[in-house]
Structure formats: C-alpha cells, structure tokens
Image (tube, rainbow over all chains, first blue to last red; front, side, top):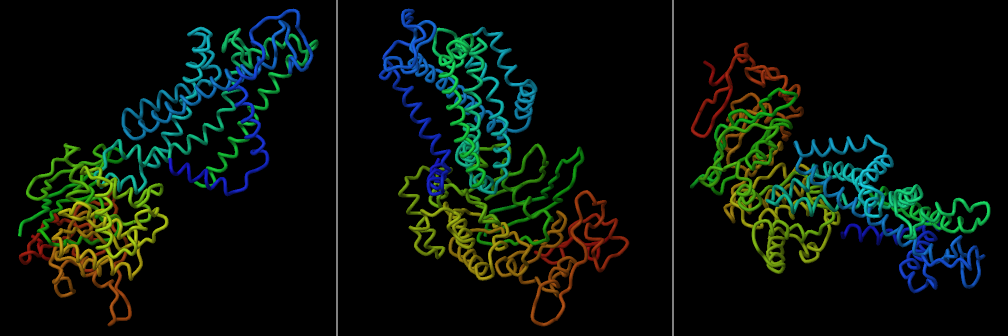
Length: 280
Length: 321
C-alpha cells in the first residue's frame, strides 16, 4: 500500500498531461452529480407525463423530455449511477477474485495450479462477449444476472495476470530470504507477493473499466442487461433509437454522456498504465 | 565441545526430464559449537544447494534428499514443516550472497527486523526496536535510529550486508550459514564483514558454516575446510593444513595455486570448468581436469580415505585399491 502511495506522490511531482487533467475534472463532476442525483433531479426519472413529451431543452427540462414526457436530464443522472455502479462493482469484484485466485494458484503450484490454469484456458477460448451472453441466456436477463455473467467472464484476465506476476515475484531473492528467516506462507504471500501484484492489477483495472462500462451498456442495449424501467444508459439509447430522425436530442444525450465517461476512463487508464510501466 | 550440526551421508538428486542427476553425493560435515566450517569450491559445485537442503528449502517435487541431518543432537524431521519453520531464522540463520536483492524494496529496515521477530516470538514494537538498535550498534552501523527508518535502496551494499547479519543474529542463533557473504561487496567491506563474523563467533559462540569460493576469506575465518567438487567433498582438512604442502587432493592444490601471492608472476589455472551433472559417467569427476590423472581414476569409486585424524580425501592417489 505504501508503494502505491509513494507512486501517487511521485506522480504528482511529474507533469500530468492536460487531457488527463480534463478527464479527471469532467469525470469527477459527472460522478458527483450522479451520486447526489436525488438532490439535483427535479423530476422523477420514471414518471410519465404525456402532456410534456418531446419538450426542447429549457430551464425546466435541461435536456428536454422523451416520448413519454420523462425528464432526460434526470434520467441520464440516474442512468450514470446505475451504469457506473454496476460496472465498478463487477470490475472490482473481478479484480479481487481474479487476484486472489491467481496468487493462490501461483503460490500453491503443482496440481492446483494446473487445474486452475486449465479452467482459465477453457474460459478464455470463448470470446468474452459471447461467454457473457451464453451465461445470461442460461440465467435469464436481470441486473443481478448480468453482474454474475460479466464477473464470470472478467475474473479470468486478472487471474492470469496475477498468476504470472506472482510466479515471477515468488522467485525473488527477498521472498526466499523471508522463507529462510522462518516466515509463514500466508505472511509471505501478503507482505511480499501481494503488493507487487496489486500495483499491476490497478493498472489493468483502469484500462479495463472503460470497456466494462461500454460492455454493460451494450448488453442493456441488446436487452440482456439491466431491464426497464431502471434508468441505464444502454437502455436509454436503445429506447431512443427509433427517434433519431424525429427527436435527435433524446438519443444524443445518453450517447454523448456514455462517450465522455468511457473516453475519460480510457485516458486516465492509459496514463496510469504508462506511469506504472515507467516505474517498473 | 559438543557438535551442533552433523550431516552424515547426504545425497541429493534432482529430477529433470524424467532423469535423475546426482547433485551431492555422500556429503558429511560436522560442526562443533563455536567453530567455523568453510566450504569452498567453484560455482556449480553444489555449495548452495547443500545448505538449502540442510534447511529443507528445496522443492520436494523436484529433489530427492537422503541422509541424516542432526542439529544440536536432534535429527531434523523434514516432513514437519512447522518445526522446520521454527528452526529457520531462529536457531539457524542465513546470510545470503546478494544483499541488494535480499530485501523487499517496499519495506523499511525496521519492517524487516519486525518480520523476523514476528515469525518466532511475540515481541512489542519497542522491544524489536531496542533489539535492532542493539544489534546494529554492535555491527558498527552509524546512526542506527535513522537506518531503521530507511528503505533498502537508500543503504549501500556493505550496510545491507551488515543489516542482514544483524537480522540473522536477532535470536542469537546457534548456527549461522553464510552463503558467500563477501562476494558482492568490495575489498574493505569484505574485511569488515569477516572480522564481524569472527567477532560473533568468538563472543556468542555461534557456529558458522561459511560457504564461499573465495579461498582467502575461508582460510582466514574457518577452523575446518571442506573442499567441494561436483557434489563430492573431495577433501576436508583443518585450516592450518591448507597449504601446498598440507593439502593432498589435486583440486585443492590447483585452487591454492590459483591464489595470487607476492612471490610468483603467473598464476596456475585449472583448465576447463566443473563437470555438469549430465556429463558425469562414473569414476572421479575431476578426471578430465586433473594434472596427476591415472587411467585407473576412471574406475575409482570415490570412497573416503582418512589420511590423518581430521584430514580426509577422496582421491585414487591416496586411497586407490
């Protein structure tokens, strides 16, 4: 943990590209807004008001209203909350599960390692999107099931990277030195192997999170992710698809917000990753 | 004087590609309390795996270990992992050859002390600190308080080597294994470290197993010297006998000849390099490089001949039948 703190400290000393700064600010604003959305939103995002449908952008409805008269701004706010929340939850769980399994597999070695590696290979031989869709097809489409499905196809990547890192760290002199001085296996794993793996996992996480957000929106767009009436960016885009030619703005707002979020995360992820690679 | 480490007939084999190679054959060593035993030999002669097998550090899926190791009169049971763990770092400590990479770069020196302490005893932070300061002062480290809060990369190689000795001395081990402690540090630090080890040996009666390929270092510190070649202890003799007149085995004499001194201009070299385990056929492994070879050496069974009390040799010239 101290290593990460040091790295962040040193990162602050170095010059940060403007694009990263802008991304951080924009994302901070978007995330804060979505977190406090109940305070900002003046309308219930699910409340149908047919008298006010297709309102243009105005003081009352900042992003206008959709075909049922629901406030697009409020819907987008709540949708960001769902999208980001689910994406971060699945990706976070994937990191934790993947890292634990990877380190465990590398440290135990032998047959356990072989079996875990075999499972990873088997799961990796499917394209991960197809794998997710197959799992949802089996479980049925719901918010809970899309989390499970994405989790099941995401942890493998982390497990493999963690295993590789742990294998190389295991051979380091200081790990041997710790064994010689009588350290117990779990202390050695947590003190000397995990910190090295975790830094790599953070880099990987920041790169993958944009993809996961996009993936979730994609699944919701196809109707196998988050279900209506829960506001979600993919669902909103899907609903507005038929209105592109008549009421473009209804389609525009969720799309542009999704675009900005994914772009922001990718820029930050790239920066953090290059940063970690520099210090390796 | 009682014997603290007694290794008898240690055989070590490694499995590779479904084949078995002898890495160490019939190695016996006994170390009395307060004594220093030196093991010398070229790189790849099995010095490091020898001490690793004593501590049970080798992966059992790849290595077969036969033989008996007694520590302090009790035979070490290699199947009992937790008992082994309580010996490592407490009763038997190790100083590794490369101090720069033997410390975890993300922890301070104090953390390293604390980790070893936590593995063997329940000690408060203050107790560990006090003990660490005491040890560091004893090993002549300036401003030990500052050193404790430093990270390994802030220390020099010599400092780290001394810190490693300090950590190894944490619980006053009865046996200290020093694996080439002088190879990666410069001349002046080498002398310092050797004199420190000597001091520890005389003051605390710590037995030391000094593994090195530096003949001069071993000679200056050890009481008994074991010369290792291709997994055999080819000659064992008291340090006082280690001279061209006293030593018998051609390999030992070759090593002695390759040592610089002020009398001659050219150094004698032993041609070639140590035989690889997969090239070994039988007979004396030193045969190809030996200056005094004899056709019968190829059939020699490498048995041990006691020339004088405390001086044994494995060579056809002295024990051939």
